[in-house]
Length: 320
Image (tube, rainbow, N blue to C red; front, side):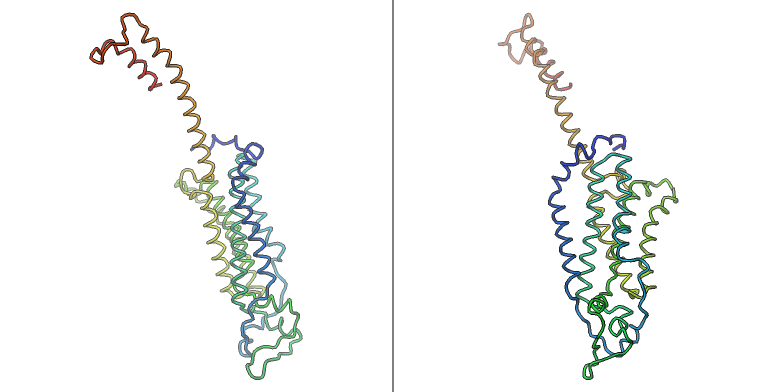
């Protein structure tokens, strides 16, 4: 399928139709947002933290190198800017819609999975000691040796959300989707040997990896938290992209499945509409064959010469 067939599927001409067909997808997307908000409001599991365990949880409290407000910019707005730029270049609303929907699902499904695991596991962060004892005075239960925190409740709550890393999973979800998207658009795997294309494909993944490294450097996460967070984000993004787009290495890997389905349906309708009138135009020729001199309607099938005008006319109608 050639790219020059694009251009007639814009937001104005087909946007409402595409959104109406996928209305349930957008409703479920809203449900995912609600679920993720609830997961952030509930109290996580408070894992037992003994006195001896505090040895590995005394890393200093530092500010985030990548603040929380920057995560949606990196994971959503940056990939969406590339998707929007592609729409203005190719004017394909199917690509715009499915890429946007796939991106949002990648990030939100990843967010729900990450936050659900955070609440269920309740792993303390590397700087948990200073969250629990902001003045440095440690206090433990005399019998169980579990911590008795006297810090801010909100800070302590976040201290039990180390595994997996939310910053990392969100960024890997959005930027992995962008990496898939770019590889299809630039035909990175067209077997022509343009290795420089891989630099474009791998750049978003490098950015996501640096975000993950910053979480370890800031002592907000253990390295296992970052590794699993990145794995979750990449896996979900891959599923969401391949739900909407073909693999980047195939011939038609530059556009979503829905676009090619619309083209196929359009070609089928067009070919059907051109065949039916042609048969109707041939009908007078068939009638005229009956009126030729020397032809009789009562002629039998044994007279091959007398029936040839009808057969010829019908045959011409089929071949047209």
